Amino acid sequence: MQKLTLNIIPFKHPTSLVEFGFFKEKKAGFFPLRKFDYPKSLWSEFESELQECDNLYCNFEDKDNCDFVTKVDLSKSWHFANHYYTKSIYNYFLKNADAVRFGYVNDVEVWLKDNTVKNAKYDTYKKYSLRVQFGQVSKGMELVLTSNGTSLVHKKSILDFDNLQPDLINNVIYKNEIYDYQEQSQELNVDLKEVFPILGGKLLDELTIDRYFKKIPNKYHPYLKEITKFYSDYLDNDIFKSIIPLSPKGFIEIDDKKILKTKNSSNELSFGTGKGREPKKDFLRLRH
Image (cartoon, rainbow, N blue to C red; front, side, top):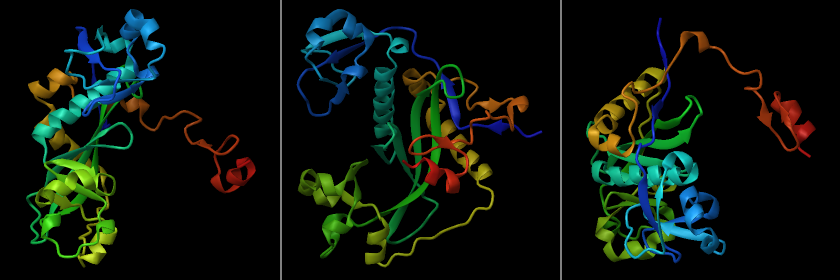
C-alpha cells in the first residue's frame, strides 16, 4: 500500500541558549520586532525599560554595542524563534540559491535556475518556499516545504532595454535577491546593468513572449519528486541542520489508520457572522 507523504519535516529547537542583541533605533539590515515578538528572557531582564519600546531591531547576529543583550531559549519564545529561523533560512540560501526573497506569509522563497530549459530570451527558475510552523501536524516544530512552479527572468538587464516602460516592471533580480521594482527602483537605479526583470503578465505581453504551459494530470508524483530532490540537495546536510536540526526521517508519512479521517468541522468555511458548509446559501445567510 502506498504511503501518504506530507510536505512537512519535523525538527527540534537547539538545546543550548542563543544570545541576541537588540537596538532601540531602526538600523539598516535589522529586522523590526513588535512587543509580542520580544523573547521572554528579554522581558524578564529589562521589563521596565521595555515598557516604552514599541519596536526593537535585531539582525540575529550582532551583539556589540546593542541597547539590550539576552540569552534566549527558543523553545519558550515562539514568535521570536519564528523570525530567527526565517532569517537564518534566508541567509543560508543567499549563499546557496540563484535568487531568494521573503514571502508573504513569513516564509522564504527560493529560486533555482532550471538549466534544462533553453531559451534565447529568458531563463527559467524553479521556485520553492520554506515556512516554519508549530504543532500543525506533529507535536512540535515543523518546516513546510512547497514547490511553487516556475518564473521567467529576462536575460537582458534593464539597462539593455530601449524605452521599456518602468510601470510594466513589477519584480526584478539584483545580485541574487528579488526586489519590488516599483517600491525600490531608486536604490536599484545606481546599478541597472545588474538588474534583471522578472517576466509578469504585462511584461510578457509587451515583449511578445509566449509562456510554455504543460498540463500535468496527476501533480502529486512530480510534486513529491521536486520537493524530495530539493530536500536532498539543500536541506539534508550538516550546514543546514546546524541552523534547523531536521528530523533524520525527513518528510512526515501519515499512518494508514489516519488516511481519509478528518474532523467533522474540517469542511466549515468562515463567513461574515459565522461558519457554514454551503457557500451559495451560507454566504448570503451569514454575510451581515
